[in-house]
Image (cartoon, rainbow, N blue to C red; front, side, top):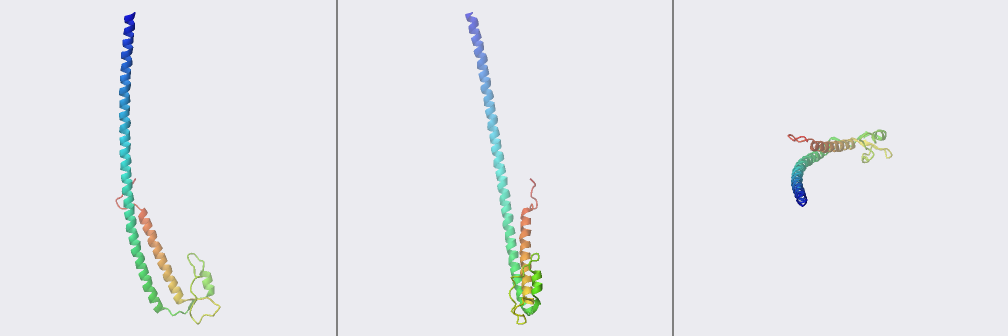
Length: 171
């Protein structure tokens, strides 16, 4: 019985040892898979960060280019408005154009504020009546046009910035 017992112990040790070796091998395989997954994830994250950085740089470059275009257009608008204001001084006489009632109607209309127009300098104006001269209306129109054009340019630049540039890939 002693031999049988020794044989059983030997078989048990062999089977148990084989199982331990198998478990160790399986554990090693799982560790290798985890390491491979971590490396793959790190590479994916690195590539995603690089792509995001490139998109950011492209967006900044587009924004810089559009900002320069808007600034140039603003300069052109300012120059043109000054030229037109100078020409308007020659073309207007300061005669009464709109009276108090007309100015009240216009004031507060969509996009209009005429309450802050300067007082007319014309001597033909009654002391208690508010009027707008042809010079006032012309200057006001030039300012409104310049403001509109400036706003349009800025909005166009914002729209262009948000649009995909030519040849950009869809994500």
